Amino acid sequence: NIFLANFKYSLFNENISSDFEIFFLNSPQNSKKTSLKFLIDNSFSFPKNLNKNNTIFSKDNIFYLDNENNIFKISKKGNIRIRVRSKKNLNNLAYSIVGIPLGYFFLLKGYYVNHSSIVEKNGTAISFLGHSSTGKSSISNFLMEKKFKFIGEDLCIIKRKNIINKNFDGLKLSKEMI
Image (cartoon, rainbow, N blue to C red):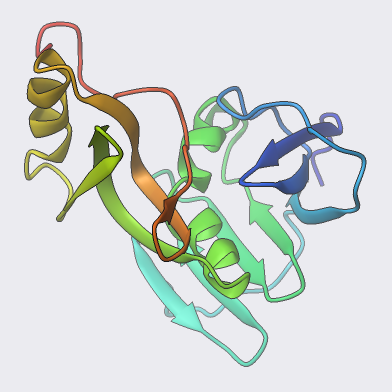
């Protein structure tokens, strides 16, 4: 096992602890119990037919292999164990949790989760859903130039009707694209 540190975060009013730094998350807003833990654990077993960007569902877990060959074991109990393939992957590990790992956790908590980009103007939110590299961020950037407010992208969470949670503050376009 690789143990780094114990970091504490908050996202959509859920407290998170992690063995590694997740630079885009905020510190906890309250002292309530941690509901999600990211743990570096290279000892767990996983299905042998797990392929890149593939998800395998079992009775109590979801297994996911990301682009960096990190394996995620996502538990319904709020633990996400990560089998890190190499120490160099630790630098990008925070990026790997956005999507399947965090999305599945929030889905279990009763949130509606989608892969989109969301902007808002005059109290009305507009969400652009689509596959990666289909222009969601580009459309959001264009609308921000028209005085729309950026709400979030990639992992967008809707808690209940008419409530869209503000997520990460970054738009992933390069400076050349903006």
